[in-house]
Image (cartoon, rainbow, N blue to C red; front, side, top):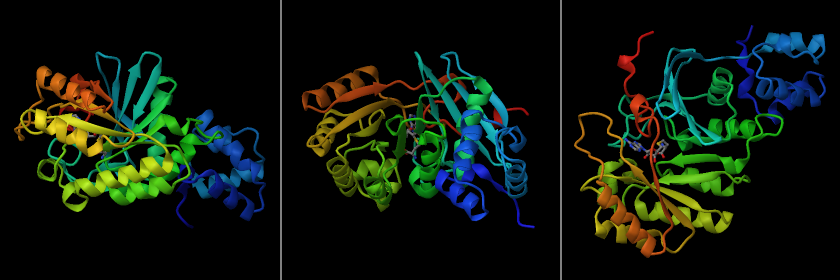
Length: 347
Ligand code: SAH
């Protein structure tokens, strides 16, 4: 017998096709979606409005996989980090960020990361594997089941590079966005990339209004390559031009993330360089306070004064800019800190 597959790996269309090819009616797929993503049931038997014959077929072909949550760390600021164990014992993390009445969940797209940015913990242990569609979706479901909180926004800013797992990430977004699935609007879903040009090009052609965030972190190739090895493959000018195309064709704004690192990328000159690079199209800059990840790098967060001056220059140059204060620092759940501190966990 073939191995059963996780039903959460299927988009609505795929499930409809599978059902009709077995002689079931296609509207059953919408009912199944409702049970999975709105009722969040853990077994087919709980899908009480489905015919017996369909239930036994579902049970025969599919499973409803759940991830084991082995640790929840709660931050003083209300956010919480969830450590999940996958079927092959790999570990991933998701973070719930509470902000007034809007909850955001920061989810992972890969186990580890290929790119090994100097400042980020996720790449330090190397790349292990892509997450399956079901594993991406299940992070949202698990956190909802565990906390009973509503989720309003989804950001792909956890572990991994979403554009290196394009197909599974996009399928998970379809499920999250579907009104029969989790029904979260496309504009409430953000993909953050370290600058994978082919991914941005594909997203430009993709018929959905998903938010795009690009981790820039430097305004010249030398600095960026020193911080982010991905810049050797996808250099700054090409990256920015690709973003320009995205903004022009999609008529959407791009957010550039810029990590403020003392003495590396936070000078007046670099603020002006950054402005010149991006001032002629619809962008927003998010200045990020660096969260130290270990003692191995000499990176330090910029001082308050440097950050204020940097922000002022961008503003004067007409570039919209905000400062992002990360949450969850006390539990290693802040940006770039995921995958940090496992050794401290006991389970
Ligand atoms: N691979 C994607 C998504 C993961 S990182 C990307 O690179 O965008 C999400 C954001 O956290 C990125 O902007 C990343 O640069 C930032 N980040 C990484 N390490 C950080 C650290 N130590 N402190 C603050 N932000 C960090």
